[in-house]
Amino acid sequence: MSGKSVLVGDFYHELGMMTRAGLPLPGALRQLGRDMRGVGLGGTVDALGEETESGRLLSQAMARFPRQFPAFHRRVIAAGEERGVLADALFAVSRFSYFQYHLIAQLRQVFLYPAVTTLVALAIMLGMGLFIVPQFALMYDEMLPGEPLPGLTGLVLGASEIVVRLAPLFLVFFCLTGGMVVWLLVGGRKAVRFLSRLVAYLPGAWRITESMDAARVCSFLSTFLAQEQALGDALQTTAQLVQLDNVRGALLSAAEAHEAGEPLADVLDRAPSIDRLIVFAFRQTPEAELAGELGRLADIYERRALLATRSTVVVWEIIAIITMSLIVGLTILSLFLPLIRLVDKLGG
Image (cartoon, rainbow, N blue to C red; front, top):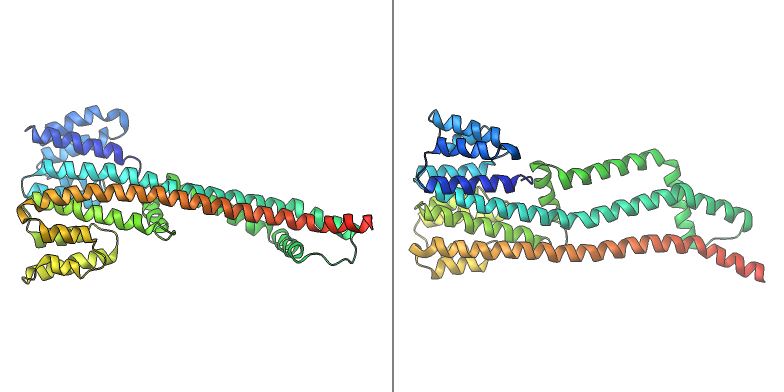
């Protein structure tokens, strides 16, 4: 979700308060539309008011604006409308919108440092390969004719020759890479979705995705159970809202086993993708209190996800600094090794 998720979260929360206070939905939307015109959502909210006034459900009206209201938000709101607890559904989606915004900001921070460092390293290497290393090569030819050069120096000179021959290709690659980085850092929902998948492959970042999916599982199960949705149906609906395929499969299998009469905690305990805290909650918590316990677990997993992103930022800052220092340092060393030999030769 884009940075507008904060505005959308505010919208959900304010609409939830108005709905809980008993205000008719079309009137509440018209009032919010007037309040939000200065922040770019006024026209969309006005349109929602017109749609609901003509008899459409809020979730159906939101389907006209998929960029602002993702499908899984609409499914949660539709479930709330069906069970007459729209305000609770709006509060749940508002909370997850805020969490999503903070998590995306953290993911972009994870990606920012290594991406920018890599681009700077590429720019330095291109500049040295095109302008500096060839000048050193000419100097070696004049001052050390026929002398064998150190292996590291020969490697750098060979790489420079490749860069000079393929300079247009390398420049195009650099520009495309820079454009991709900018798109990932400031782009919309597609960029965020791609970034979240990309970050998941970084060392240590798997904890972010796992904690985020666990937070989704607990948050949405808590919402659906609070709406008095049957546990099997709640599991199936939640399965469509998670990101990891193994978690989705575990939830669907658990729903089927629960419908067949098997204890749900035993089914979840056999799924490695389901965290032990969730299994423990289902095993130890009475069903009447399960919604509240899962809500508390959602808070824990959200904090875990944010802490995991900060840890990953530190790891990647260290990796990026070490990598760039090694590349630049070895390149400079390779250029000065022949000069040391030249000084020794002149001194002899």
